[in-house]
Length: 273
Length: 180
Image (cartoon, rainbow over all chains, first blue to last red; front, side, top):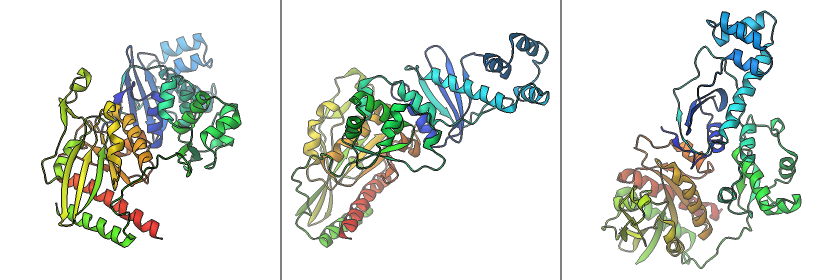
């Protein structure tokens, strides 16, 4: 079913988080005010990008990453324009001109750069097309999203949004056990590592902020990034301030068996409606 | 006569009134008013301002009341009042309006703070072609796998019953776990 909406309600970082968590395959289409971006994913990993009318052919990307000279690019465009990216890539590898890893690195850098540019988009509508895959003749990559999500979260500057995302600092954090995700693969900043070192269900976010001498804004921004990257989750502290009030629970003075009997009567009645 | 209460909450226009209407044995005592805000009027014409009130008689000794909270933020002073003494609560989210997900999460957190009672989340309008997938909604709402997120169509009695039953099963499970 539809995964569609507006960038005013979901940032690009949040969308990457959704795609990453759900291991989605398909293409995220974002229609911005000036151009449309198409970001393809395979099982939650970034595989291909296209932004506006920008030339994203292999030869152009290799030229941009200084692996082809302007002359070589012109020659390829003149004489080898009939070759697909896959064919051109094979030709360059077989001729010993470039290694497979160089091609993949250049493509990964390009795809990451496109996503970074999208982090600045705040207006636009998005939709996720499950059936839309990259063109067959293009070389796709397989890029983990966590680092990009962390980068995107670092760019979030709006205090109100951060406060909305993390309304209270009296909560603790714990690491999420997710197969295939390793902290060691993350490109975390020194500040982020400092926060990570204090993550423990016994430490509230406020306590971590105090220990690391961070302001509310700084700690919120880092925690937001870790949450979005799916590395940690919020847990409520047992001693967190819960608004306690006298609760005239209907079953307050009943023993547990009577309470269960009451709930079972409700269940029987609802089933019969 | 013993009475028990469940609260149906959620953002503006999530389908709370309709949810209660689908199972209540009395005409829902609604406190709807015409909407004055132009932006909200594009979504619907009238909204609940104090509460909705539905009833399900279990037997001659027991009655279940369903209270629907007002969805608009400016009436949130009513939430705390309505949450008093509730057996559990249901957070309704419109699956077709992702712009309300953040507010839905905030309402959920607010009610969790009012009372540590069991709750479920109902993803309403799942029959609409532009409805978000349940698992996408779970991720967007940041619900842990333990939280029940149930597909719902508030106009269909069967799905409404299912949501109520799942909440009751959670309440029962809670009683069992505290017993051990």
